[in-house]
Image (tube, rainbow, N blue to C red; front, side, top):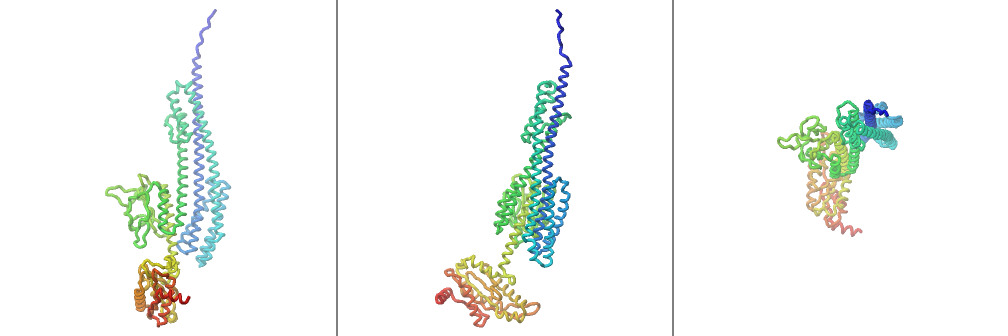
Length: 618
C-alpha cells in the first residue's frame, strides 16, 4: 500500500496569519487612537463651552455692573450735587453705552436667540435708566434737587432697575443652563469614547499576547500596557497619571499624544473648576464682609470685621490695615493678621509709594520697582515681595492695606485681583462710616457758632443720666444771654448780629475745658455745663466770660461795632441730688441778672433751696 507523503505546513500560512494579525493590530491601534482623539475632541468641546460661558458672563456682568455704577453715581450727584460725581457719571454712562453697543455683536460669541432676547431687553431697560438718570442730572443741574432725588429714588426707577438686573440674571441663568447641558453632553461622549478606547486597547493587548507576541513584544506590548494603565487612571479622572513619551510616528505615538491631550484637557478643566469654586467662595466672603461693614457704627467694629474676613480671603498672605490720622496726617496701624513683619506701626503718607501715586505698588514681580520706605528690612536683605493698596474713596486718601507673603507663599495675579476688590470694599465702607459720623456731628452742631446745639445738650443729659451724678461731684450750669441783642440787630443788621454771636461762641469755646460743654441754647442765648465746679468757682468763671466778651473788639465789613455785654445766671447741683431743675434754676438766675440791670452775674438757688421751694409750691 502506497504511503501518503507527509504534509508540510504551508510556509505562507504563518506569514498570512501574521500579516492578518499585523493588519488587525494596525486597525485596532488606529481605532484606539481615533477613539482617544474623539474623547479629546469631546473634552475640547466641553472646555470651549465653559470658555464661551465665561466670555458671555463677562459681557453681561459688565453691563449689570455699569448699570448699577451709573445709577449710584447719578444718585450721589442728585443728593450731594458734587461736580466730581457728575463727571464720573458722564464717564460711566459713556462706558455703559459702549457696552450696550458691544451687545449687538454678542452673536459672535454663540449666544442663542432666547438668551439674546433677554439680554437685549435688559439693554432696553438700561437705556431707559440712562434716560432717567440724565433727566435727573439735568434737573439737579437746573436746581431741582428734590425732583432729581424723587426721580432716582422713586418706585418706578427702582422697578426699572430691578427689571434690568432680573433680565441680566435671566440671561445668565439661560446661559448657565445651556452650557451645563453642553458640558454634560460632551462629558457623556467623552466617557463613551474613553470606554471604547479601553475596549480597543484591551483587544489589541490580547492580540499582542497571543499571535504577535514574538513580533511586537518590545515595540508594542510594553507601550500598550503602560498606555492602558494611563487610560484607566484617566478614565477615573486621576489626572496625575502622565502618559509615556513615545517619539515614533505610529499608532502608539498617536495614542500617547491623544492621552496627553486628554490629560491636559482634564487638568485644565479641573483647574478652571477649582478656580471658579474659589472665585465664588471669595466673592461670597467679600459680599458677607461688605454686608457686615455696612452695619458697623464705629471704626473699631469695622476693623474687627476686617480682622475676621481678610485672613480667609487671602490665607497665604499676612496683612495690616492702616488708617489716616486726620491730626498728624500719618498712617496709623488699625488691625493686623497672620503676623506681618515688614512695616512700621505708623508712618507718614509720603513714606509709601502707593499713597504718593494713588495706585497699587509692588516692588517685586513682573516689573521691578522701588520698595516703600515704611517697609523694615535688614541690612543686605533682598527686597521682599510686598503689596501696598491705597484706600481711596471720593478722591480722598483714607488709609492703606499692606500685604506680604506668609510662610513662604507667593503673591499670585489672581490673589491681587481679590485684594483690589477687598481694598475697594474697605475704602467704601470707611468713607461711608466717616460720612455717617460727619452727618451725625453736623446734626449736633450749631452751624453759625460751631458750638453744640440743643439736641446735643439733650443727648448728653440723657446719656449721662441727666448728669445727676457727675464723677467730679458737682455740675455747674451757666445760662448766658447777649444784652439788648434785638436792638443791636435793628441798629446794625442781622449780618452784624451773626458776627457778634460767632464772636461770643469763639469766646465760650476758648474758655471751655476738655469735659465742658458749650451750647447755643437758642437765638442769643448760650449755655455751658461745667462738671466739677463749686458755686464760687462757677461764679468766677461766669464773671471772667462776662469781662472777656465786654472787651472783645468787634467789627463787620470794615466798620467798628459797639461792644456787647452778657447777663449770666449760674446754678450748681451736687451728685447727691437730681439735676432736673439745674437749667431751670440757671434760667431763673439769668432773669434776675436782667432785672438787676443786665451786664452782671447772678447765682441761683441751691439744690436744697430749690427742693424746699418746690415742696412749698406743691
